[in-house]
Image (cartoon, rainbow, N blue to C red; front, side, top):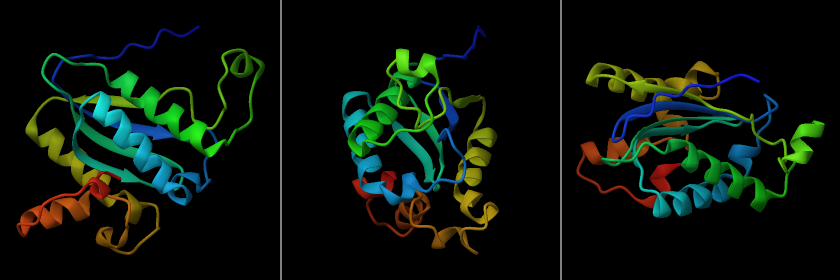
Length: 168
């Protein structure tokens, strides 16, 4: 069994990629309201400073800065994924070990994370999130994609205040 090592630094900023188990699905955008609520409830229990987030049909990219003294990003992703899965009632292909562990098979078991080490890396990770819908050919311009914090950031630049809907 592989030993996954994660760099856990309290209060650090991280870039994440979280995927559905089967690429090409559209459940994340089809059920965006449930994903938003799963995120909202989890962030209420375990605060997150969301520097950027984009939801694509089959994966999520996020840039989070965790509170001082807190490095528990895995708990946050576990709760978001579990709530969303429970509320949708959806299942993917399940291996015997997934059934034994009561996993629905909707998500990939793990997620990718990278600790951001300086402001330049943070800026590049935010830009990556914003540009990903264009990279995937979903929209011609990043501002055309509805499920991104780019809209929140643009409102902040012109003096507006963010809303909960801006999170996802």
